[in-house]
Image (cartoon, rainbow, N blue to C red; front, side, top):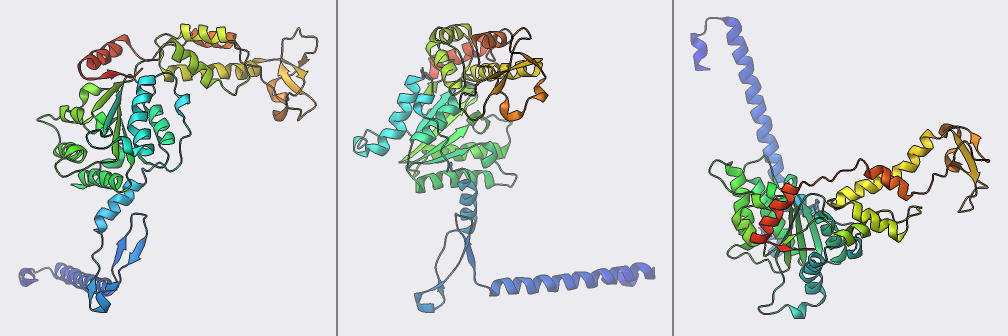
Length: 399
């Protein structure tokens, strides 16, 4: 305002005066809003996302109960969304092979919960297990089995998106809130998928916020005054050599999840085709297991899904259909694709068949052979060699 006496342009003077009036009015509005907020009872944020009004203590003498820090409660509420409340319904029997890995997880998760008297004194449950191996070998699937079988334990499944924030200092507070929540709900399991994205090796040129996240992980997993009794950290990664050495040390057991062997591949075909009408025999399953050497569990799942589409493709290309009995007895007959030379064949296209009366062909070995002619494994020999070398130096076999 002092500079107005030197301004000779009246229009500029008027504009400055109007702006000043607006600023003063806005300041008064903010002041009134602050006074009104301070006059209302304070509320605290609970971990469930609700608000509870503070009540006077000490007979109304003005002393208020010291509640939990609202910021901490807010972070815990955000982390609480990572709790797996609906079990994935994956049992140990649904995981083909990997007997050593399943035995270790049972030892770390199931036994301490059911038989706590066994784990006293120096015999303590494992607090850090790392599952590593090529992509698609069942690391996350094992974690789903743990979530199903752990029963009353709290299972928290988190990723980098749950723990990394754009705000300065909030990422490490989220890490701390994660472990504090796990300690409150012990016995609990923290599953971190693709943990290498959060705890890669520290370098001189890395971002300061990334370094602080790693430091907080190190402190929370095994720091002075940080007891993690009843808390198991379960990590999964495809690139264990990228982990920081200090993080690697904190995972007491490092289990290699390799490609499935012949019995495991055979069992996977049986598991994936379960509940689907097919004509495959035990010899066919053995042959499929032999033909898919080098395939991961994910590759086999894709092969089975592709084979299940073959009857649908046959329906799309069919020019003739015939009437067949309904196995369930809901309809007098169903339409099944057939050869034009079939005596019962009726010339029609797929779109001419009523939706509820279509019966696709059963899955056969021929369908699988058609798919396997074009199927290729997704894991290269170089990747396997690198994992095997790392296992010799730092890990143990899980098959």
